[in-house]
Structure formats: C-alpha cells, structure tokens
Image 1 (cartoon, helix red, strand yellow):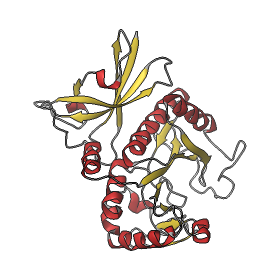
Image 2 (cartoon, rainbow, N blue to C red):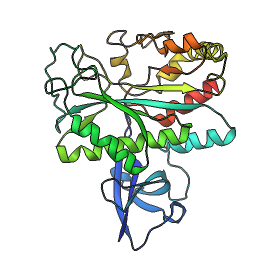
Image 3 (cartoon, rainbow, N blue to C red):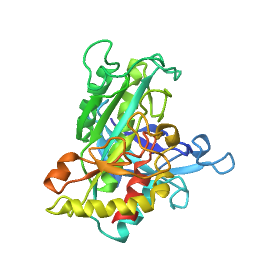
Length: 326
C-alpha cells in the first residue's frame, strides 16, 4: 500500500488555510501519473451547496516525513471544466512566468508563534523582550522541540531549509528557505508551513501566523530576500538602488498584497517600518527594505524586503516583485 496525501489551499480570505486528504494506491506513482481528485469546495470556501465539486490537480511531489515510504503532493484547485479556480493564485504565477524568463531568486524568512489550541497566548503581555532572540534554556524559549523537528521533517520531505532560530518574542520562531526561483520557493514555503502545522499536532500546540498577537511586542513577518544575477555581480549595488526607486513608486500596491493584518505590525516600532511610507537603508531593520551592511561594503549582493506579513501568500509576493522589478 502506498499513500499520497493531497494538499491544497482553501478559499479563506485573510490567509489561505492548508487542507489535505489521503488517497491509497497499490503501487508508487510518478507525479505525472497521479490522478486528479475531487473534493467538496462548499466546505472550504471554494463553492456552495449547489456548486460544490472542485478538483485537485497534483503539481509538485514530496516524500512524506510522517509516513516513511509514502508521499505528499501539492495540488492546484481547479473547476470541474479544468480551468483554475478563482482562489488558485499559483496558476497566476505560473502564467506570469511563462510569459518571460527571469533570473530573480527569492528566499523567505517565515516567522510564526506558538499558541495553545484555543489560540490563547502563552506569555503575559507585560513581558519584557531582550533575552529571547536566539535564546537558550527554559524560560528563554518555548517550542524548541517542534522547531528542531520541523527542520528534520522538511529535509526528509525534500525541502532543504537555510536555517532556524528563536525570535525576539518568546514563543516565536523563524525559519528560512533556500534561495530559489519564484515558483519552487513558493511551493516549498507552503509545504513547509504544512509540515510545521501537522508536526505540531502531537505536541497539542497551535501555529499562529497572526502579524501582531501582542500590541507592545514584536510581530510576525515573512521577510523576503531578493537578488538577480546583476545584483550579485560587481556593481550590483547600483542595480539594487535603482530597484528601490521602483519599490517606492509601487509601495501601496505591494502592501495591499503582503498579508492580512499587516497594518497592525508595521507601526514603525518593534523593528518595523511605516505601513504608509516606503524607506530603505543599509543594515536598517526599521526600514521597509534592508540592504545588508556587507552589500554596501562589497558592492553587490541582495536586499531584504521586510514588509510581508507572516500571513502572506508567497505566490502573490513573488508575482508582485517580478512585475515591479523584472
């Protein structure tokens, strides 16, 4: 018996939620051999009682880290006639990439917060930050077992992450994806979120991507690092600086696609920039975009867009950056 867990994004408005169901096969199948499978879109915000049939189209196959020898497959949501459903943002990115080639690569820094299953916070609101960033020891971290296991499970699935660390706010962690082209990095981020959420079930811990759980403490973002062959070559800093002008001109367009609840996080405090105004600087974590200090010194490299919220859809983020910069 071989099982394949079909995974898709539902029609939730604020942030698509991950859904899954498992299909049993008598033998192993390649991605191209996996059949389309139907589901009840009326129960996922992607249909109604009278028009509920939707289809899952397998698009990227992964090993199942929770069930050795079996598989998971990321799926696009399609209508019964085979056209992409309105909630299918992956297909929008696919069509955009088919229009022209690009050498732009992206790396996401996904922050998340541990809360209990009823969404109750785990720490008092009046706690003082300072001891928790990359902290060690009881009282300085919450959830290390889950974060460490997540790294291992992603590797087993075929997703090689760049790293992981405890964040400024206790009970909050971050992991980073390896730099990849837009479609793969977006697929891998969604699947790494799925692995994180499923892995936390046995600990009876819930993963929150809410951008601002505590009004006076650090929020949760999903910073994205961006580079091209030009920015990584000698003189690349000039290319990066020209990109800053384009990002400033389209700031509000980007903000509108960078995740629900971002206005609560981007207050200009707690290592964030202003929601309404664009800014950039070298080594400045209070700017919309940070250019690492070593890039200023060596004259080439990448930049970090710090505006996306933890709730962001990477398909929309990479699509907008490609539209603006490529």
